Length: 80
Image (cartoon, rainbow, N blue to C red; front, side, top):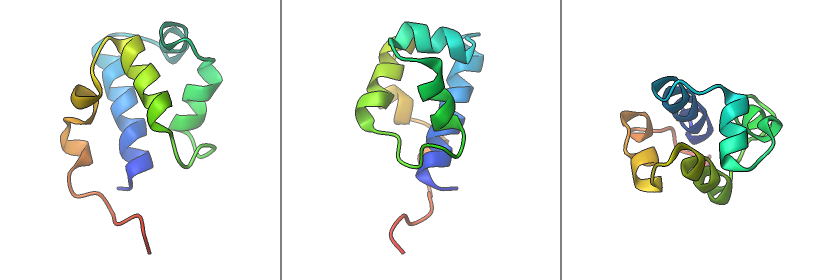
């Protein structure tokens, strides 16, 4: 799994835990839901840390909590 896939899976995982739809997360994070959908799909290949921080703020979690997941262990090498 690469980093982008791990970020997308983590967003979905947290939305399920908090019983939030992507549209609701967009509202809470102060961004268009289309931005989040692009992160979950193939459109965005490099989700920025500021965008991830906004998502964390919307979920009322810290960046540390976001990245504290087994999803981020043993990721593929990004530089090839």
